[in-house]
Image (cartoon, rainbow, N blue to C red; front, side, top):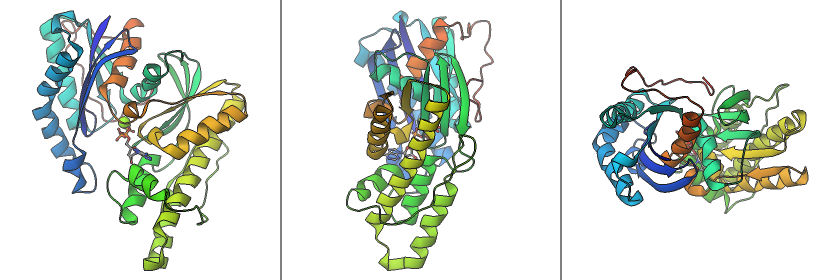
Length: 333
Ligand SMILES: Nc1ncnc2c1ncn2[C@@H]1O[C@H](COP(=O)(O)OP(=O)(O)OP(=O)(O)O)[C@@H](O)[C@H]1O
Ligand SMILES: [Mg+2]
């Protein structure tokens, strides 16, 4: 079964072709990072315009790389939320017209469910149930994945997402965008010598604005004397400990056996090592996505779309043309 998938929720225009939801025949990612770098973050209007100029080329390239003809595609998967509404609309409109022209179903797919599904591509044996620790630019969620299309949010951030905190800390420390890889690379030259606050709630929620503010305050107080590499190492270690400890609490309380890392921050070296080590210590299995499937890409959307499709969650586009982009969309909605 061949599916074409489209991702355009933020600053990557991406199109993939997957066979049976786990085999990636092509995954073309056209990133706009260099364009947004000079503004220190994504500019929504520029992102939408770039998606618009890129999308048909990316579709053509994905078909060419996969050596697949449009007439062999059985369904179109597309990210319809959450994300920047203008950016999402480009992917959704393109997907609707393509599905209409080919007279095939369209599968509306949740971006975060896509991040989780990246693990099905990288770990062929992985099956639900499991706990997903979703850490990205806009989310820090602990999600109980009961089945391929059945999700329950057990904990989430009450303020900043972890990727957002990495990006803001990088900006404070004078490092580039996106901040996660910059902070992590700089941390390699330092030691976690700064004592930064951790938050713990009765339930499984997170909070990262306290630690972000602590970094900003110390940076202002120490000025030129700030040991930037040590601060990066301290921030990275503290945040990864908070994420891992919370995930391990859920594993125990819910008697789960498998833990899965997902989202852009799952590319973080310290977090990948820590989650695998702590899981092993407690007798759990840990799964992480290949680095190329951590940040936004259409292959992960293709995998999530496949499971939606086979479970009957799709539109027959000739009957129902009203699929819309949703900037805010809860997991499992
Ligand atoms: N090695 C890394 N260490 C820490 N953070 C990282 C690393 N690589 C990427 N990130 C962070 O991941 C985030 C990007 O992830 P992603 O592309 O999934 O976010 P998004 O799509 O904007 O948000 P969301 O998926 O929540 O809608 C950025 O905040 C970036 O700094
Ligand atoms: Mg993302």
